Image 1 (cartoon, rainbow, N blue to C red):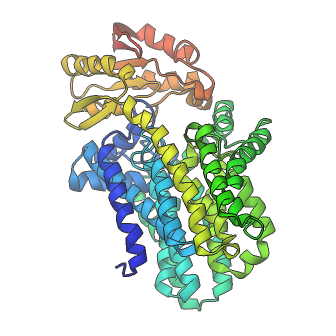
Image 2: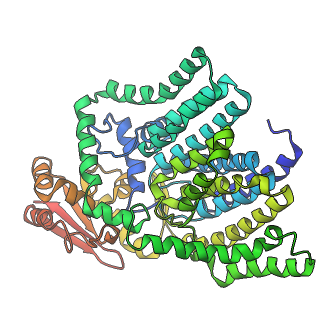
Image 3: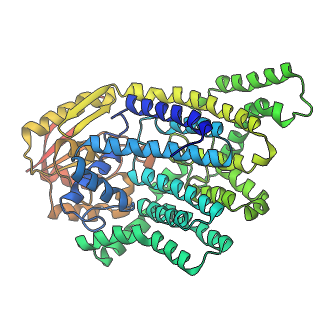
Length: 551
């Protein structure tokens, strides 16, 4: 229970604002074609007895699919279950960020920072968000990391065994959500080294760490998963990790280094620091700038420059922040070595955000890490400023939040059509609406419940909403998957298990270099389909579907 009045003064409005935004954007966070369909379809198939890594091809951790399957079992197999689970998770992320910022900076800074997180993670309704993202493993794992970080901080402060176990448990849970969070575990040896807990405490912590991995994989093995299935999944993931198409995607997502990366980091650093330094000049040079009129002019000039530069829609603006964090870690290593809670925050943040080290982009993976990076950066300078000055810096972040939030509203406005099914409502753009509605009508009138429909390059959300099965393994064939498996292996698979229908859509896959399926890639498989299937109808428009039925 929160008893501090100062905390409640900021936390209660934050909760109301978050709930309001979640209410307004309810059922908008999703993707009709890419990624989000898997997040709805796989838990359903888990309930139907399918096994992750064995029957269902999966590159993420098992927790989110098992947990969402449990939610389906309790609350019903529909999108509302996922929307509510995602909304609660988003509320948890916003709230936990508030308390982390409050612990290391100030209560008001926590409010401003949380509003910033709200603007970049809840207001946007494309596949990168905190509510219904490209992978629930990402948001569940992020929340687990944040909770773990708070618990480890509590343990560092009070040496409370329950806090250690709590932190260990959620660290293990994070890894079960997304394997990339395994790097976060590297802070644990140093925590134990600095606190020197007794053997009983260490054993309790280790048991807590492995509790969720043992539970998740215990369930999978009880369902029929074999070690060889895991080895096969790891081998596929290894091949996929070395493909040129994935490399292309990661380079343009700020994950892999590129020859233009250094220039982008320098450019964005200068672009951000120019208005920021003007705005913060009154506190950075407080001994020299004593004229209140001059200070007021600098404050308003810094804010006005944010509007002039249109920073709300400049999604690359924060690309420099992971590199800046590393630089500050190297400069302040002595401080971090002595201050264990600060070490947990800063090093934990750095390890969590390794994926986007070479360029944090806001309309991509960057939304999950930037708020924590901001806290970590300013926490290293807390002793340089008083509370009033920290709040002054926080207000700058609030202005950024407003600008970004307003800019991100365009994604909400663009989703102005609803597709309603027994599984729930999904909002879509105008370009997708007409032909997808016709596709739903075609499937309802012309297919049987037990017909298998393969929608490519991806479209499992359509399978889920129309209650039609797709292939368990090759349910998506983006350019990445063609390079990983090869046309020959894919064709051999479908010779043995030919679906009743194959539907090609006009999704632009150029994030993976090649654009349109059958026109730019996967030629052999497309010829296989044309040879063994009859073209039934083409639903043409801004977004098209071509329907093939097995001969």
